[in-house]
Length: 139
Image 1 (cartoon, rainbow, N blue to C red):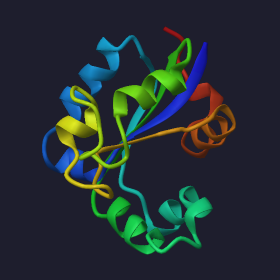
Image 2 (image 1 turned 135 degrees about the vertical axis):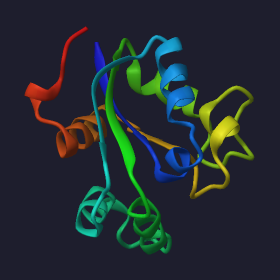
Image 3 (image 1 turned 30 degrees about the vertical axis):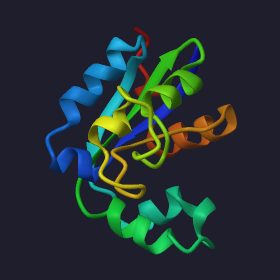
C-alpha cells in the first residue's frame, strides 16, 4: 500500500467543498488514514513549499495558503499517488478532465482546491511535514 499527502486548500474550505471532496476521495477507494485541519503560518507554508522558493509564484502561493484553514490528510491505497493525481485533475482547472476535483471545485490555476504529492519521495517528505508515524491509523 502506498501513502500520499492531500491538502484541501483554503479556497475549497471557504466555498464549502470539504465534504464533497472527502467524499470523492473515499469513493475513489483512497482510505483516509490521518486527517487534521490547520491554519498554516507563513513560516510553515514557506517551509512546505520551499522547493518553489525561486519561482515567481512563490509569494502569492504562500499568501494564498495562509489565507485561511486547510485540511491535510494522508491517503492510502495501491498506487495512491497516481490515483489521487488522476482524481485531482490538471493543475489548471480549465485543462482538467470532467469529474475531477479541480474541474468541479477549483477557480483558477492557483486557487485549485487541492494539493497531492507527485512522487513517492515527495509523499514521504510531505506526509512527515504534517504527521508523525503515530498519527497514521491503519484501516
